[in-house]
Length: 381
Ligand SMILES: *Cc1c(COP(=O)(O)O)cnc(C)c1O
Image (cartoon, rainbow, N blue to C red; front, side, top):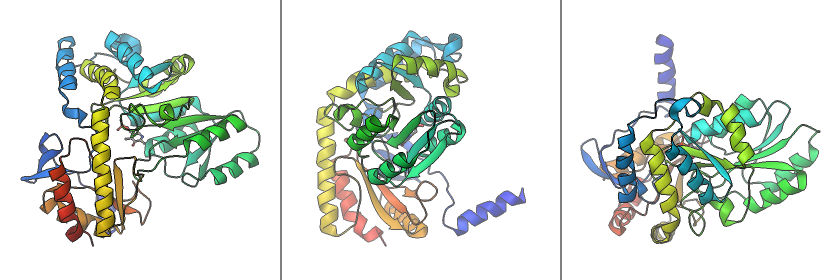
């Protein structure tokens, strides 16, 4: 397959070749990478829940039901554990119903493909996650991409549109790579005014944002038509859920292909989802610790003159370096000093948008952050 060798060579020449980093002995925010003990500063485990005793116990107790669920939900894989997890997840985000699935990627693709069609128009934020983009492509809806977070531009697009069956706005609430928030109130206003359906992806917001970590929509009292939440980020486990009305759930049961044609998540994953949904609202102490880390880091970066982005309310702090190779070099230098920050490059971010995406966790210690601040300046170009 010479063409692959050539294509890989081309990626390498552009500084875009990706190879996975192997983490050995992961424990909390630490792991062994190439024989060296490292602190991980690029995980989405914002609260440190992947190691939480309550979730560990939930996972191990569920093993008495087996390590697998045996079939898709509609055949014989629909356990009472799944149903209970869904009720808890729905109440976490303050919506009437939820459907649990294997991943946020799969659920976004499955939901968008079965809710929208070629007769519909959808306004999609320019920085939306790949799973939203792929779901919209599969739906064959007419996609209008609007500049990131720009409600004026969106308003213009909306008022110029020709009649169609239904219109949607699709956005992340907390943007994964930039760490900023969507203008949710304005989007809600616009949706009410122009009869648009709002689809919000709260993958990075659940567990983190809002007074009880219930996400941006709940914090601002906004009821989207569809909400996606993941279990693999702040909630510590794996899988994802779609939340909305009971009718939405019934439609997804019938038409969401990533649910209909996919094996139900394992009993342990469902048990972790259930436990995490119950636990997350009680963890204000961890969220306060995360905010404290964030403030300290933000202040220090400013003092050091290191440009960074992200909303100060969020644990995602992009350090823009633009160039692919410069970003790779910085990441390698940090790794040599026991700090793991993955280089984020196209196509995850636009061309010229390469960056270190620094993420904080309540599981980090003050010493971890001291070490980061000590080494960072010398590792950047
Ligand atoms: C991570 C992510 C997803 C995918 O969720 P997984 O459960 O990891 O597949 C979807 N949307 C956004 C915005 C994400 O950041």
